Amino acid sequence: MAIDIRSITDNEIAAFRQVISRAFGGDAKDDEESLQRFRDQVDLDRTYSAFEGDEVVGTAATFSFDMSLPGGAMTALGGLTMVAVVPTHRRRGLLNRLVAAHFADCKARGELVAGLWASESSIYGRYGYGDACPVFQVSYDSSKVGVPAGPDETRIVGKEDAEDAMKAIYSQVLTSRPGQLARSDVWWEYRHLRDPEEWRNGGTERRYVVAYRDGEPVGYTTYRQKSKWDEGMPGGSVTVGEVIGLDSDARLSLWSLVSSVDLFPKVEAWGVPIDWEFPNQVANPRAIKRITGDGQYIRVLDVPAALTARGYQATDSLVVGVEDSHGLTGGTFRIDASPEGVEVTTSSDDPDVTLGVATLSRLYLGAPGAWAMAQAGLIHGHEGAVQRFGRLLLSEPAPWCPEVY
Image (tube, rainbow, N blue to C red; front, side, top):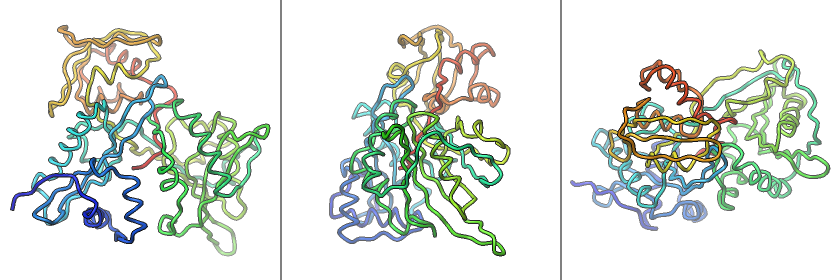
């Protein structure tokens, strides 16, 4: 039987969610509250479902985001999500068709870049995605690290008091670092303030912490506790959520608080920025374990427009060749960039560097690593040109996306 790709209707939401839940090892609830949360978050016109007759056999959807870029500008981002194919229909090209529908939708809406979080990191490079926002998974025993006291007052507050502070602080830092996503009120409520028991992984409900300076909120974080005792000695753990502060003092104050919870010496967090300053603030940074992982993936859909949209901290002029096997973008372009502005034009000159669109996408938000990518054969060009290219795209602070979607 032929398989069609189309958007779902309201009465097909339950079947769509069932496929996603089973793919990721869960059981979808089909009560009205759960279905309404889906309606509130998902634009049905941006769903792509594979139908064999009336049966849903594959799913994908796109969230419409605004994302910060190097230099502080914002751009529309099509966030691919809920990608699943039922086990009986694997190896039939359905993923290719679902991703193609996503790309066509993004291009039609004028989105210069697409994004996703990869459940399997080996899949999406072949579609031109690159890990643009690498993150740390961190853990440490707070009794061994030597955490200094933070300069700001911290308070554990209720959800209602935390909400206003979190929204105000996040809006102030949104454009300060590339890769961050603007959040709607619906997104705040369902993704950051809602706290169902199935999200807790055996831990407590979410605790909310706000840092204050001169009576004004300057940072926030959240954490959960999980109790443990070893031969009568406390060995509980604190799992930290996003740490957002207006400056380093605010962030230090928050890390100091979560590192000083009595009976809970073990601190762990996932999704920490790779330029995390905290190890440079403690007495014993060796005691902090850091594992680098992949974060938000980016896929450039329009090379010249995307390169024009972002800012640059260096001044240079380079000819760059970009290859895209999917035919969505690519070509040879001259980049004339400086902190004052950029011009990207089509060029007939020989490229100084050549790379695939997945590699460009990895570097687009300013992540380091161009030199290592060249050594791995992902960027071609003379040594000096590769170094200049890496410096031109580099962003400080590094890109980070605290949002999993």
